[in-house]
Amino acid sequence: MLGNIVQTDTDFPWRNGTFTPAPAFAEFASLFAAAQAFTERDEFDSPESDSAFNAIFDLGLSIRDVDADELYDEVMLNLTDSDVSWRC
Image (tube, rainbow, N blue to C red; front, side, top):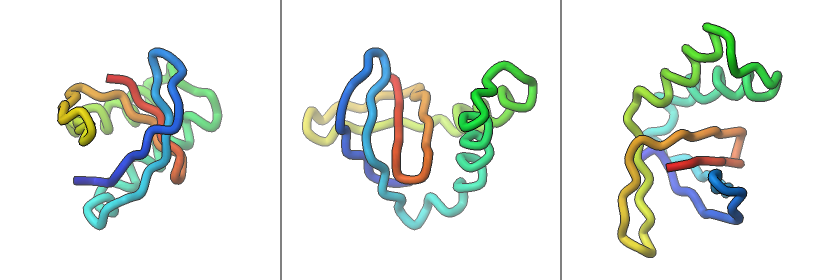
């Protein structure tokens, strides 16, 4: 588990929330920081940005909705500090 997400709103197809990292997140923090740099520059279509975003996607992350007891695979996740947006 890399952290906990609390959903705060929805902007279909994206969901938004806050992220609290677990200790295991430290191993992957640099991947998210690299992707965040491209997001802040609105650079989404270069080979370098594709590589950064794919490095996160290739982790095979999933999100478990603990209230509905559902697991969502193949998640697209954007993390900026404690703010997170995702789509499943």
